[in-house]
Each structure stands twice: as structure tokens, then as C-alpha cells.
Length: 503
Image (cartoon, rainbow, N blue to C red; front, side, top):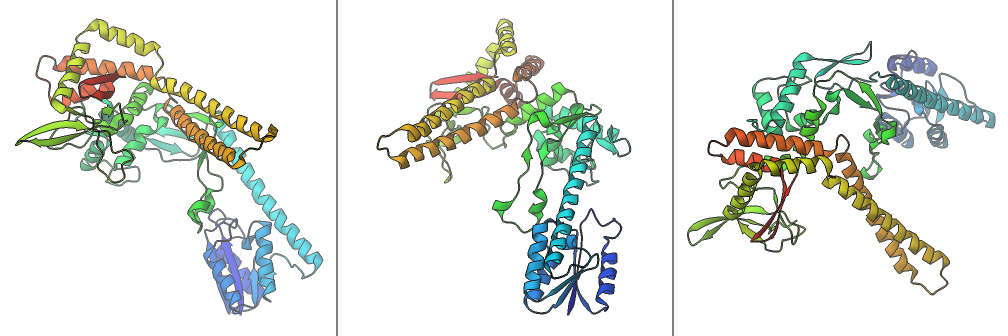
């Protein structure tokens, strides 16, 4: 039985001479008969051998069903020369004759050489096409043009001018999302609340759907494009095409971030001001604690307390004390997966909440203290900046320690325990890797603006909210909003000592 193999990738489907029907007709004509087994892979790259019908063909050859294979061109079998040679050798070793419509390759040293040269040229052409495409896109981006349509909500893409233009209807929704998320008096409880409102009011998504999810709202809030520039050439996706083929998890190619100096910035119309965008990023860091799930017993300081002894966060609980329910915060963790069960420190909720609220009111009622705080916030290093310096020093110490151990192995004539020293080197390597990851993550948090500007904005909003409600009784929600705007963390040293760390 004669088999014909046809392949066309997504990019090649419209190219002359490579359509599925044209290849089939040419192969059948070459075979001289309509009675052929057809193996057709549509939408698969020739860069990889993991293709359904190619594997089916190889299995049929192994079982002796096929005696001749006809293919339009060697690069239909594979794009890479090595892959072509592997398949050709496998087929010929099983006595299967291989013919190509676009060229004859005799089973001789000269024929094998010509076949190899043809494959090498095909692989070279593929690489050159890819290089030209990448160079063209990069050159386009350097001129301020947008290379491709990422379907960013709030914009339409003009393919003729390679520019993004504002879609006014969608832009209004984007502005609403940022306003609803950043306003201290917003009635929406975080990203979930905003997504629910958009769904209930029938606002269509980018694809015309009628359901908004929290993740979609989050992506909009995190998209810096709205501030007036689109980042291009940021992510390196080379090799990720292979992920759609049947590879193990370990073989998956991950998308990596290129160095910042390689990023390209293209101007786009502004929808959101930079200050509001930066404020939203800061609030998202706090969103988990700002919108903690309501329970029967409300805890004003939920998500803010941390035990200074063991480092555990402290959560609200209720204890039945002779028929009276008493609320308190504890560092105990009862879940099976808890890394640290806690050291048993606890504080009564009423006492802790009164102490913190009194301190906040004293601060906000003292203009001199507020002014001093603003001055410090505008001139001092943020926590993240200090932490970056500490990590730099720690990484440097780790590197020096590793170098000393390597030098010790190299130069010392003493009878050393090499296994022990190698274990120490491996530990230092692991430590350095973890420190470097912490450093990279922290750098990303400081990417936009210095945090001091956000601190000042948070303080201003807290003061405004406090003044609006000062003449009336503060509700639980208002108190909680004000505290969470001003307080970064409350460290509990013991049941009588609380340290309030402000932004």
C-alpha cells in the first residue's frame, strides 16, 4: 500500500503550493493511483516530530501496512535537517521507499548528500524568515508603532497605521473600574464586587460576553498601557511553540522576562493618569486584607496583626467564657499544612481595637504630627528600598562565602572533608538563588514610582475620609477603611504591647 504524507502549518495554509488540496493532488499524481493511505497534519509546525498523523504513519510502517511513502517536499516531513534524516532513515531501514514530488533523491552517496543539502537549505530559509520577521517587528516597535493587536480593553487597533485608538465606550468602563477600586468611599467590595456589578448591569466584555470575572478586572487594573505607553519586546517566548505538543511538565518552555534595557515603549492615548494607576497598584497589595470576608463577629484589625515572637499573622476568634462570648486575636494555626503552629500569643479584640483607633484619632487630630509624618514620608526611604539594600549585602556575603570555600578546595594541601565543603557550597548556592528571587520580586514592586508618593496620597485620602465623618459616629466600615489606609502592620510583642507600623 502507498501512503502520502501532507502537512501544512497555520502560517503556510494560504501560501501557494503548500495548501492541503494542492499537496494531495500532486502526491496522488506522483503515485499514479487514487488508492492511497492519507496522512494529513493541518496546523502543525514542521519543527517538531510530535504530530498525530506522522506518528500514525510511522506506526503503520512499523506494522508493515505501507511499502512506499510519497511526500510533496522533504520540509513537509520536517523543517529541521536532523529530523528529516531521522524519519528518512527509519522508513528506508524498514524497506519503505520514500519519494518526493518536488525532487528525486537517489539511494546513493550523491543522492543522500543532495538530500542533506536540501534539508539544510530549508532549515536555513526557515531561520532567516524568522530572523527577518523578528527584526521587522522590533524595528517597527522602535519607531513607536504597535506590533500586534493584543485586544486591550478600552482600545481598538488600527492595523493600517499600527496604532491603538481609544474605544470610548470601553474606556468609560476602564475609568469606572479604577475609580470604584481606588475611591475610599466606594460601595464595591474590591475586584469581586466590581466584576459582579459589571455583570449585573450587562456591560459587555471585550469578546462580547456578559460575564465579568475578578481576574479580568485585576488584569485591567494591572495594565500599565492605560497610562500612555505600551511595553513591547518584554517577554521572550522563544521555544514555547513546543509546549502544545505532548511534552512532559519538565520539558515545558517557560516565558521569561527580558532585561529592562531591551524593552520598547510605544506611545498610546492615555485613559488613566499615572498617579491613579500607581495608587491602584498599592491598594491591590492590600486587597486581600481590605476585603476580608465578613463573618458574624467583625474584627476591625483583621489581616493587620502579626505576632512579633513567632511571625505568624493573628486571626480573630471567639472563646466561650462561662456563657459569655469573648473575641480575641490569636497566632495559633490549627490547619494541617501550617508551617508554624504559633507560640500562643493572644490579645483581646476589644482592647486592641480601642487602642489602635485611639492612636489613629490622636494622630489625625494633631496637624503638627500629620505634617511631620508627611515630611518623613516624602524624604525617607521606603521599607522596600531598605530591604533591597539589605538583600544586596546578603547576596554579596553569600557569594564571598562560596568563593572562599572554592579557594579552600583549590589551594589547601590539608586533609579536608571535601563532601562537607561541597555540601556547604550547595547550601550557599541555594541561599543565593532564594535571595536573588526575593530581590527580583522586590524590584518589580518598585518599578513605577517611589512608594513615598503613594504614602502621601493614602494619608490625604484617610484625612479626607476622617474629616467627612468626624461630626458623626464612625461606622465599623469607615473605621476599618481609615485604619487600612494608614497602617501597614501591627506587631504584637505581648498581650499588653502593640507596635503600630504606619505607611
